[in-house]
Every structure is written in C-alpha cells, then in structure tokens.
Length: 111
Image (cartoon, rainbow, N blue to C red; front, top):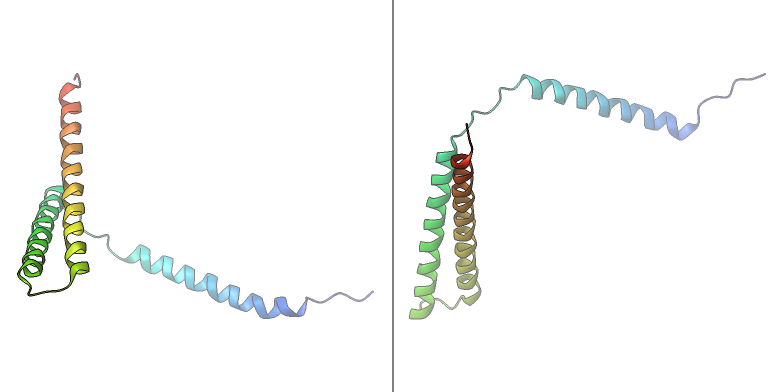
C-alpha cells in the first residue's frame, strides 16, 4: 500500500505559519525584555487635564471672537472648538465629582 502525501496547498501554507509563530516568539521576547514605563502620579494627570480644558476654552473663545468680529468665516471650526471645550469641561467636572464621591465613601467607612 502506498502512503498518501500531504495536500499541495497546505505545504505552501505551513512555512508562512511557522514564520508567523517565530516572529511572535521574537516579539514576546523583545517585549518582556523592555523596561516597564514609569508610573505618572494621578495629580499630574488631573492637573494636565485641567490645563488642557483651560487651553481649549481659550481657543474656543478666540475663534468665537474672531468670528463675531468678522475676521473669520469658519463657522464649523468655531462650533467644533466650542463643543470640544464643552466636552472636555464636562469630562473634568465628572471626574472631579467621582473623586469627591469616592472621598465621601471612604470617609463614611468604619475602620
């Protein structure tokens, strides 16, 4: 009885799979060897968010003033800048509210 050989297309597919697995093993080795990023204090993240909201508000105000004065005819850019500033402000306000709620929960806990 003669042995049945492998199917033709699979022979072409196997080397590409092997190279894929080899590249994943190399990537995993490189990833595990790289140092982990330093942690950033939450206060710095919150401060940067407030600074970003302040900047977005100033940009929105400048675009609005330029549109009102007639120096700009970009109504879409003006409206988008206003909405971006509004969304960023709401995000920071919600984070602040959640932090205050968490503080109150910790305060009410019995030790």
